[in-house]
Image 1 (cartoon, rainbow, N blue to C red):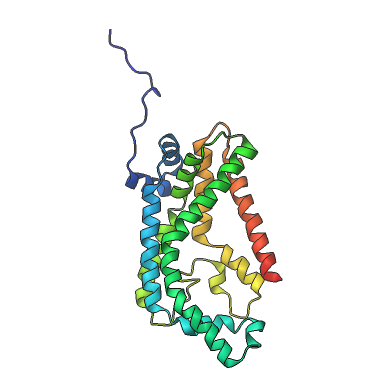
Image 2 (cartoon, one colour):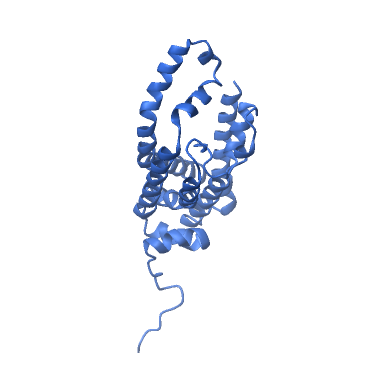
Length: 246
């Protein structure tokens, strides 16, 4: 007699890379469970690097780096103690290397960011919850959790061509955080706090919490995952704000 498979015995069909990128935004729990079963990270990493590099190219075309660096340097009391010649020499050196730094940031920032955050989450989930999570799985979850940053970069690619040269704030190309709406005279600690309250970054954190809960559902409950991810973020923000207040 032919055996009829019981419900739940079939292995879910694999989801392709594009499906995973879309799925983490609209159906995160099931998509992250699939990612945990078959970890992959190339697609989100490549997407973020390509978009980040594109933003860097457009940003360099729109920035008056000399004026921007001078404006930022004037906020430093130590800079005011220099002679005008010394100021210009210091600014000229920074202007010469900043465009290359921006290009390199698009290529290197994303892999470094993912490696570091995956390591932190991997350690935290295993230490606090006994998840028994492999680093490769943590890296795959973290990489896909950063997908909202791709949307942020796409918006930046739309906004930048609309700006005139020298009209761009490189720290807030897209006004997605509270800091973008604060005045230039706001206290440094308050600006630092406002910059951390970013819509897209909080979205990434929420996806990371959902992802790790879905990866090891028996050991990492949703509440515990959210508490761990947002707790680590709160510690980082507190340290950053405290440093800015000094």
